[in-house]
Length: 217
Image 1 (cartoon, rainbow, N blue to C red):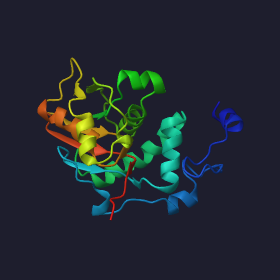
Image 2 (cartoon, one colour):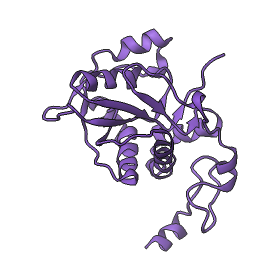
Image 3 (cartoon, rainbow, N blue to C red):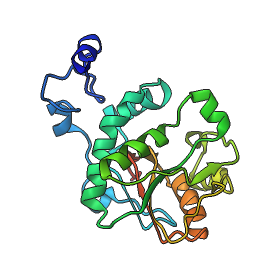
Image 4 (cartoon, one colour):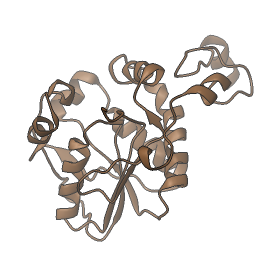
């Protein structure tokens, strides 16, 4: 059936949308070479309550456009190639073992509106590639305005403060947790989720994202 699907819906590079030739993998050679890859210390973001936070790409150009199609236009299939880059980044740059993968969840209202949770899709795919269990450890109990609409880092922190709690029946205590999100800007959302997990006794919490917003200079 795969050949039929490829015939009806030829695979495209998720970033430049060029048709992929047989054997090219999930990204075209040009994007593999030219995407804004993060490297070294600048590609590791310091986020309060996280032991580390890494991601393979900078959030700019084709990465930004691709992510908008994934998040706002329903192109859920991008979770596959995105998760490949993220899991490779985790294996290369997070030199530790994890017990479980979880994600920064949407509120019920936002989930009903969008129809899917983009971070959950990534977490499930990443967990599969890393051979780890995935669990919904958190609930978002307050529907907050979009972080992109907040004027600065302080406003972003205030916007999500108290918006998350540990999901009923879940026990993060003593676990080493890989917390997945799609994009990190100031880190407010990841920080608040990590704070909740650490307060509940998590041993370690590391963040993994697809892309990071470059620091303003």
